[in-house]
Amino acid sequence: MESHTVRAEPHPRRWWILGVLCLSLLVLVIDNTVLNLAIPSLMRDLKATPADIQWIIDAYVLVFAGLLLTAGSLSDRYGRRRFLIVGLLLFGGASLVAVLVTEPWQLVAARALMGVGGSILMPSTLSILITVFDDAERRKAIAAWSAVAMVGVIAGPTLGGFLLEHYWWGSIFLINVPVAALAVVAAAALLMPESRGPARRLDPPGVLLSVTGMTALVYAVISSPSKGWASPEVLTAAGLAVLALGGFVLWERRSAHPMLPLELFRNRNFSGSSFSIVLMSFGAGALLLMLTQYLQFVLGYGAMKAGLALLPYAVASAVFNILGAALGQKVSSRTLAAAGLAVMAFGFGALAFMTADTGYGLLITGLMLMGVGAGIAGPAVYATLMGAVPPQHAGVGSALNDTVQQVGMALSVAVLGSVLAGVYRSSMPESAPAAARDSVAVALRLGDPGLARTARESFVSAMAFGSWVGVVFTLAAAVLAFVLLRPAVAASSAARPGLVEAGG
Image (cartoon, rainbow, N blue to C red; front, side, top):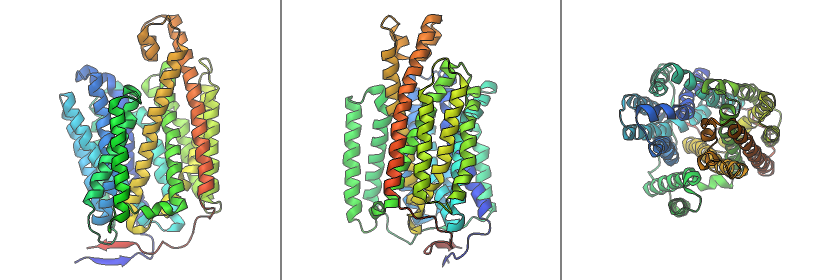
């Protein structure tokens, strides 16, 4: 028979539990960043076509983003630790399946199953964190959690480059299996507490509408660069997203047991931090999209060296995550978020002045500034969002945090991808081959030194324009954070009341 108690003290094994949560997060982040490096190997060994590659990438994103809110809501009802372990098992098992495939369609299916596991796993990492740490330590824990995410984004290409240089393409999926197994064992061995919100009925219409709407929205965003913003397919998906998400909002407003309590958005801290995260994620996605190509196409770095070249961003972010968490006890989240985002804008500004001959010097300045800004703003924004979520909705609150990050990243790839392609194409001479005007990679492979020089200069011009777009978005995020977030300093007292812990 279960007993239900209110936690008065932080969990005695909370820092060990944080290690498990960070390990679980790390396996997801690394997996999301290494697949692009394996595209040449997949085309060679699996005979995958460009359309196959697109589905291998998109299958995971569509399922992951579409199910996040549902998975977070269900974890609140049925147990966050349970969903963490189930998600790890599914993700690790699907990764093993991916290693064994022999056909592209099989890898698409495996990636979709990995998306299911990731959507179940991801919200639990943050919702468990805020249930085992009290207000005095929660910001430090979130800083560690977000620092691991930042490090994983950079470590992924580095590790992936090493594996692909020394082993076969399946090694990038095989690495997930022991990490997931270790996290499952650690979660069980540490006797991680189970927690859930008060018992509530399921919300099947809300589930159906949210899954349909989010999947259609993400599909429209990620398809727009290749198919065109005005293509019938993208417009249909966008229209379906509007209808489904609009229906979701109307249904949730009248539902007695909503999966996403819409009154959360009346809280300025919740709505302000949500929109700030979208724009901050846009900036991070833009950084990776532009700089990974700059390092490889303009500077001629290999995949592994390009990953290592981005390490200053991860180091600066990790260091200033710790500083940002410490400052959060004395400085308001509004000030930290706005200041950090403004510093990120200066980082984008530095990148806007790069040329084909600038080299790595100015790049590292921009990287350091962006890492510092992300480190200062990240803990403040995430802690503010989760601090505004009632404990009984920790899972769906965490899922919403993950969802807005996914949307922000997808938007950055779609918008900046279109901007980069358009400016690059317009900067190339009319006399250049059509394929070279569409792709800097093709221009470099043609073996014409003059064309290669022109293509590099055109790409850097496109990157400078994209950097100015990044400046605008991050400054908008800074203003939004300063206007919407309340100026209160983080609490340093005991845990918030109302957390229900389930023990067997």
